[in-house]
Every structure is written in structure tokens, then in C-alpha cells.
Image (tube, rainbow, N blue to C red; front, top):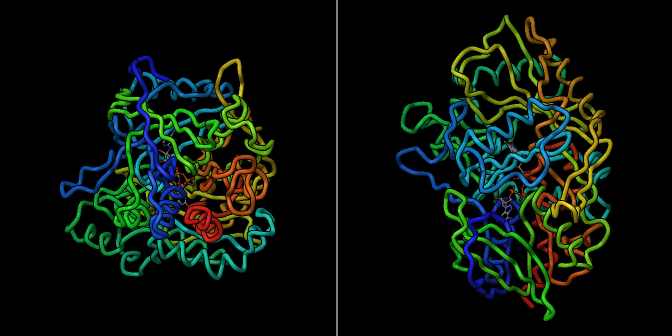
Amino acid sequence: MSNDTPRGPVREESHPVVIIGAGVGGSVAAFRLADAGVDNLVLERGRRWPITPDGDTFPTVPYPDKRIIWLDDKPPTPVCDQVPWLARITESITAAALPRSTGLLDVLPHKNLTVVCGAGVGGGTLVYGGILPQPKAGPFREVFPPEVDYEEMDRVHYPRARRRLGAADFPDDVLAHRRYRSNRVFGSAVEKAGLPVERVPSTFDFDIIRAELDGRAKPSATVGQYFFTGCDSGAKLSVDRTYLARAEATGRTEVRPLHKVTAIAQDADGRYRVSAERLGVDGDVLERIDVLCARLILAAGGVHTPRMLVTARDTGALPLLNEHVGEQWGTNADQLPLIRTIAVATGSRQGGPPTFLTRNADGSALLTQGGQPVPVETGLLLCPGVGMSDRFGRWTYSAATEHAHLRWASGSDTTGRRAITELLHLVARHIPLGGVGLNPLAPHPLVLHPLGGAVIGKATDAYGRLHGHDGLYCLDSALMPGSTAAVNPVLTIAAVVERCLDHVIGDFTS
Ligand SMILES: Cc1cc2nc3c(=O)[nH]c(=O)nc-3n(C[C@H](O)[C@H](O)[C@H](O)COP(=O)(O)OP(=O)(O)OC[C@H]3O[C@@H](n4cnc5c(N)ncnc54)[C@H](O)[C@@H]3O)c2cc1C
């Protein structure tokens, strides 16, 4: 806790249901509860990022300002000790170069990898690329427990989540524009390689993208400002504008931005005690509050949910959580490699979201390509890939440091990385003078898809109820089994949480 925490009494409040985190899982949960007539309070550490008529909501890349990094305190975990230059850069960014701010991107250096996740009302969807692929049945069955039936998910929960997230297919007229040249280069190479070409469903409003292209809206998605930041034009439909907006419209969901949860516990009377700090936008602590509730939903994402749970179990605050809490944490084997070419123009300032994706034969690796915000011709295509991990990491609590730490071994994603690299080579071969460029982050991955640590069917029952403590739920990426079966995770997180709520909603209404 920061030194400037106000002294004096902690204010107490009571609410029937508290949700920690206003990202994907938290927004789906808030909507489903509100829709069922259940009042709920959402505590979110970050700010709101409302789209303004002036088009100045978000910091931009590659010229950010202090709103880009979440920095209310020092990183809770030791910085990477394998790549000292990266550690120095990260430290200087987080500790000195940028002032304290409740910014958009939470950068969390750990030994062997660095995780990046979104902070704010909308969570990761404020900064995500917006793409929503569905996994193939084979990898899904390999990863998820049999109770999570792929046929049912395919029939009921995936279509429902796509609809409620606001997914749309990429239209031809937008693809034809010069701002989407790099997408066409990638799509044509995938086709020539004989690989399957899939149009990517994404949460973008293509009418706003058209308005950007013809000068009626501020260029943002169309000049590469769509990934690692938000779209000032409003083209990206983050969950604060879909699920959570619908929840708030019922009057049953109250969202409190700039409320950071610092601890969770269960009192002797069975109620959960959620300790929170109310923050100013610079991260200073303005007030301390304890919120008491009968039911508590953790939706703080794939780092903070396992961190909070492991800490609560091992400090005795939630002592009955089982031994699986903290286990099976994975990266989705996600990679950010490059294809280079000197023979084909890939375009400066290229638009997103990605139009096309391709997969290998068994669906165990996926490759896509989006835009880029650099204002010069680079001859590079950034091709994010997702695969399957060989091994998982785990969270453990150290009484000596009073922190939870992530242990994840380098080499855990070797098979996934190899499968992504094979796809890259196949595609690059069909781009004149194309080659697979460096994967500069390979030795110390930048992980955008932290998953697991409170896994469905292990730490929880088949519907997200944490074993050991009645009325305690995990409904976010921590519930995923360290992987979303070789696809970007948001659609699967939303669909799995929808499925869980179909079963547990009666716990809240009875
Ligand atoms: C740059 C980037 C690009 C991505 N692109 C894609 C993509 O194209 N497609 C895709 O499917 N996925 C993508 N992802 C991944 C996706 O954003 C995450 O998998 C997803 O948002 C996780 O959902 P969640 O509900 O678990 O957590 P989140 O959406 O991260 O929400 C968790 C929320 O909890 C809040 N929180 C955390 N700790 C506390 C606390 N102590 N107190 C109060 N609140 C707290 C956070 O601020 C956050 O708002 C991307 C991620 C990044 C970083």
C-alpha cells in the first residue's frame, strides 16, 4: 500500500454482490446479474475512457503521454533478471520516465516474461485488437474439461457472446482502401500459400471506420491507433460500450472507477470483506473503504485474479481455497513476430483491425496481421500468432516478500512457437522477397493473453464457483485452463462466462 494512504477509520459499506474488475468477465457478469434483477457493484481500479467529440480520449502510439501506463505504485513483482536491458527500460519507464498515472496499460515484468493488460472501465478491451476468432473443436476439447461441451458452446454461447460483444465481419469496401494495403498483402500471400483464409470477426463499427476514411471522424483505427491504445473515433466497441453499458442502463449495476481492491477476506459471519482504495487520477489514495457482500465475483483478469486468490489463501484470509488455485497459468503461446519484405510496399500508417487470419491443419496455431501506426514505409508486417503451450506456470505466495510471484519457465511455449513460425514461413514465401523477420521478444515474451490460475473444473466447479468458500466466483480469464485453445481469448472468455452464468444465476436470485 502506498505511503500516502490516509490514516483514520476505514469506511464500511454493504452490497449484495460485488464484482472486482470492469473488463470482459466483469462486464458479462454485471449484465447477466442486472438482467436477472440482481443489484451489483463493480469496483474497477482504472478510469473511465469516454469517447469525446474532440477525439482526444486516448494516448496515441508511438507518441504516448503519461496516460499510457498504469502506475499507481511500484510493480508488485521482481523485474526480469534474464534480460537486463529490458529490466532497465521497464524500470525507467515505470519508475522515472512517466509520472504516476492511472493509465491504460498495466505492464507487469516477471522473471522470464512481461505481461501487459488493460486498466480502466472496459479492461483489456480498451487496448485490444478487437479480434474474436472461435477455437476449433479439437484444440478446445484438448484444453477444456469435458463438462464444457464444445457442441453446446458452438450452438449457444459463442453466437450469443459474439452478438453481445458487437462482432462484425470485415467489409470489402474498407479492405480496398489504401489504408488497408498491408492487410491485402497478407491475405493474398495466405491464399497463394494454399492456407485457409478466414475473415476475422471483430468488435469494430465499420460505419465509423468509413467515416474515418472519408474525413468525417478522427482517423484512429485507420492509421493504426487501435491496438495497445483505444480509438478516439469510437470505432472500437470495448465492453464498457456493449455489455457494461447495457448493465448500467438497467439501473442495477453501479460501476465505481478508480477503486482499487487491495485485499479480499471472509468474515466470521460468512460475508466477504473487499478492501479497496479510492484513487485520484494520478494514483494517490484518497480514501480507504471496506465493502461487505454476500457474494463476490473475481474478474480482475489473468494476473490480478490469481494473485489476489493465492494471497488470500496463503495468508489465511480465504483458507479453504483448494491447492489448484494458482496452478495452470499460461500465455496462450501468443507471439508478436514480423514478416519483412523489400519488394512490396506494406504502407505507412496502416489501419486495423486485422481482416484475415489463417490456421494450421489441426487448428493448433493461428496467424493474423493488423495495421501499424509508424508514419513511414517499414517493409514489415506485424503478424500476431497464437498457439498451444507445452507447460504452464503457477502463482505462489511468499511470506518473506508478502507478494504472490509467478513462476513460468522459458521454453514452455516451444511447440506453439514452432507451429506459428511454420505458418509465418509459408506465408512469407508468397510475398516477393519476403522473409521471416526477427521475433525481438522471443527471449523474453511480451504476453498479452495471461490465462488461468483459477481453472474451471479444478480451482472451481464446472461453472466458476470457487471450491471451499460458498458465494465466491471466478468469472474471467483466470478461469481459462491456461489457454483458450489457440485463439485470441476474449470471445471464449465471454462465452464461457455466459455459460457459467446460465447455471449459477439461481445462486443470486434465490
Ligand atoms: C495490447 C493487447 C491486445 C489484445 N488483443 C486482443 C484481441 O485482439 N483479441 C482478444 O481476444 N484478446 C486480445 N487481448 C487480450 C484480452 O484483452 C484479455 O484476454 C481480456 O481482456 C481478459 O479479460 P478479463 O475479463 O479476464 O480481464 P480484463 O479485461 O483485463 O479486465 C480486468 C479488469 O480488472 C481490473 N482490475 C485489476 N486489478 C484490480 C484491482 N485490484 N481492483 C479493481 N480492479 C482491478 C483491471 O483494471 C481491468 O479493468 C489483447 C490484450 C492486450 C493487452
